[in-house]
Length: 188
Length: 82
Image (cartoon, rainbow over all chains, first blue to last red; front, side, top):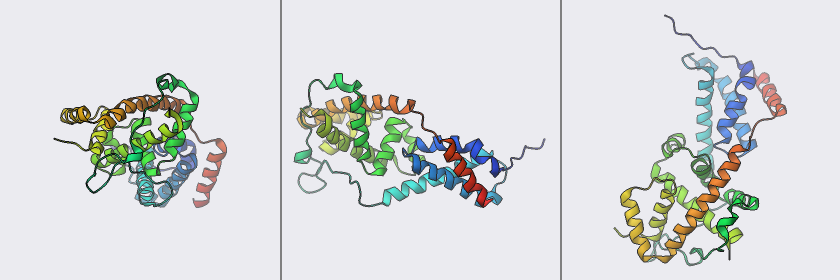
């Protein structure tokens, strides 16, 4: 029995797959315009590579595989981008005190009413601002792990990082978020 | 066996996703026995986890999608290259 061979119909790509590819992207990169550009780039790249399509996988699977490369490229780019938001260190990184809390970053007491306030809408806004103040790479991994709840293994595979790498990023993101929320919301 | 505060809080973060090993949790608890600062971190971390969970339920019901206008532009850009 002959295996059905898939074909490409680029003129139908946008109506058929734009939403699907966009959803895939936005759950990883929480930025509408950036995600839109990546989807457009994926279509362009697919068009350029259409002679390499062998018809073994479906059109959609093939487009996703191209998009995945685009997302890794994007991650690498923000990983190497210096400046802008900086990740603030919470612990001494060398010397006698290596691994100890840096004095002004030690957790302080929070308002006792806090737990009742979690439902507060403004809290979510403060949180969003704090996440956005993280370097993009940290925000991206933090969101994938915590908000989208991807498996550790999945994130590592997709972004080509090790799990210890991932936990360092999560740890730095969470300690910085803790401090940010303390300063902006939970302070006594 | 002895952890620095940096290592202890890393394990605490990992445990928020239930991915810290038994040995790690043991070391963390030993550290917490002696370290008030990290004790505070642990307590606050579970409050923050609740906030993140709340944020998740909000973000995931917020439907992000491309509008028709954006799709038209995308389609036209693609047609130019066909």
